[in-house]
Length: 427
Image 1 (tube, rainbow, N blue to C red):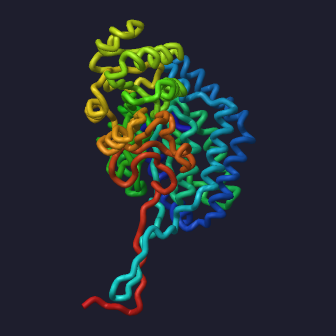
Image 2 (cartoon, rainbow, N blue to C red):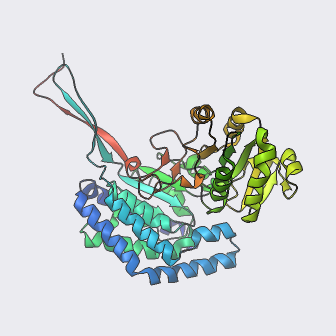
Image 3 (cartoon, rainbow, N blue to C red):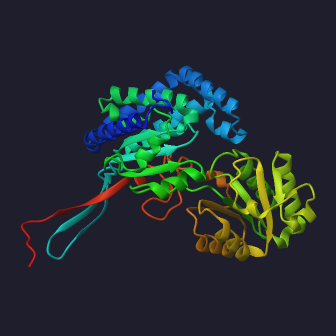
């Protein structure tokens, strides 16, 4: 494994070789049978369960390094693996194997008056580059999803999780070998040199077809600014939860606590709570007390502070903060219209939720907010490909081109047209 102090020439040549090998592997992978891909995925899941002790040992090294580096609690939570999380990684791969193979699916078909029969058919993207931070499970999720969609993939995980990701990647390669598929179909960048990211953004001499960044705002911003290949944007999750005047109080309390506190370090965690001013006297304090009891710090606007003094004053920065921690900003608004105004002003267009019994308010919320995922009477923590029944996901795309929302197997395909004729020529 190359370290960050290796020369720039070493990194350039290394990345060029990865790109060439991925391009070669992509061709047989694009036509691999569903049975072969599923056999590889099953073998990968088996290898991960069989090698869980080695994966935990590698993760312990990353965790020790993270503690010494002073990483935040939320970052350490994203980095940490447990036997249960490893079992969930393996199960996620099995669920991907159980999904329908998107490659070759006829999306649409029609006949022209001249007798031509036209089909739009799903095809792999080719070679996908995934750049991610801290979460070692992304190594398995991204590798398995790209394989099921017939793509080769180059994975560049964060330096903080390099040992964990390497241990997981070894299991993925074991699965590829067992199924007779190219080992280069899933490659992990074996260097912590940041220049490797720059080489991927350049496109690896035309061998990279799309880049998917999964990480903090600075990473995504760099990818979007420098990439010379298409990008599936995954911006920060400034996620809003709005409590309408018609919300059931017990439901609102339960959803608010879960949306914020189930796992604070994921992109679907609620970061801002908006409460209809009309229910200040009935809903606000019980919901905030439930959050406080669950260990959440409250950053409140002036009106909320008057009703709930056990909070800290919110600043302008709080409305644009993705805390990824046990902190939430809270504001009173005049009904669903003002909630929508606030969300459209400060949202990252990832996920928003409304708790309400008024169907008209819900429809307005759904129609007027331009975010990838909208929920009604449900926790924002359901913003997840697995929870959508799509298997694991590479991330939540917040852009508007090609893929939006959870990026699963279908979103990792493109399409081509097949036109069948019987000797027609154009006049």
